[in-house]
Length: 210
Ligand code: URA
Image (cartoon, rainbow, N blue to C red):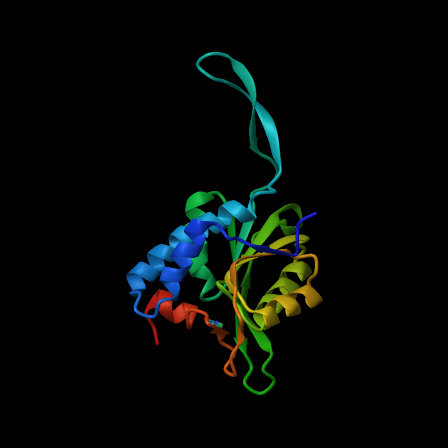
């Protein structure tokens, strides 16, 4: 059985994440590090993809060699910061299908409201990897996964860079069947809902907005 929470402690991941956290890291370097770290995290999250064998011929002889089985996996980006993780993963898995979920926070109710939802067909037959760099309150992740389950997804993974204990607890309560893979578990959320120590606003840092 897959653990509910996997903390990827690989030294390369940890080193790159430290560089990303530093406030003086430029947008260009932040983006490059994000691309690299996404590939390393993708390696971890795809560990359990099913494989089968295919008969091939090497220059020396025939063999039954392993290949990925089943339908193409789906990457679902939670807009907009999810797109930063998406790019690197797509380099590693170019045939993956891609979906997008757009949510904003209603200022009165503080609840996430959907403004965009577009996903590939046959979600029920595919592994679905939801990507969002920051698991903070967990509200948008939980809402996005609610929508994906309604659309038929049954085998879902959640991939992030940083997770706050509050977000992990919220996900565990709402979606105990969805394993979380993260490069770090930070201390807490501050009063504005930012992860601390964190890396700031992931979207602003990767897109150069502020
Ligand atoms: N989203 C961000 O971009 N940063 C945080 O710290 C929390 C949510």
